[in-house]
Image (cartoon, rainbow, N blue to C red; front, side):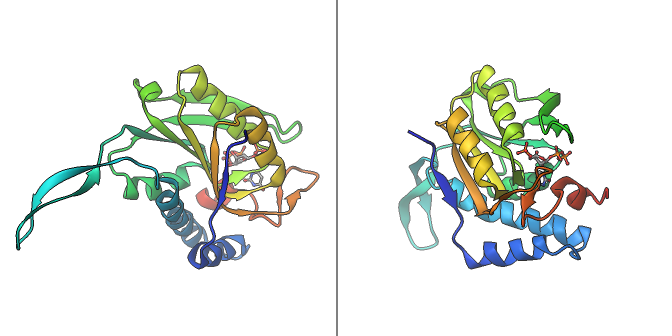
Length: 210
Ligand code: PRP
Ligand code: URA
């Protein structure tokens, strides 16, 4: 069975994505809004975190109330653009560890190349959220997830802001165990592998490198 695709159906996410699509949005605003949407998607993507009960004394009385069970969690951005989402995830899950996978797409072949991989030692025991603003051909996310599985990870989710149907199909075929959480699914890819209508090169827009 394929992993589920959870598309955020929320006016705040829709509104913020439109600001990101606008080519005139400043680097500062772009960066801030990527982080904000990251926070909103994290809210949805962590719905299944296990809870336990603890005793707490309110100003009125003693009671028991839910608290996170403390399952180990790690966020793994695909460099560079994925870095833009880390802050949003950490604001929701401050104790998360952060691993990094550096990957770039060859502009000609669109094939991903790994240039860096640094992960927490106990990564195999952690629930993993791979983050990248763009899922285009799916090559980068596919390779990043494979690298994590080679290191023993078996509970992986993928968070993206904009997904192309081609990228979703690739992840569902290569990694049917991985659920995808995305802000929106766009029409498809152009001849240069860019998402249409998309928002352009997410890394360049986050870091102002264009
Ligand atoms: C972008 C983006 C994804 C990848 C998506 O990164 O952030 O990682 O392309 O494309 P794919 O689904 O076809 O693999 P890019 O390679 O431009 O590197 P950057 O983050 O350094 O800008
Ligand atoms: N990477 C990006 O940053 N944007 C796209 O549209 C496709 C890949």
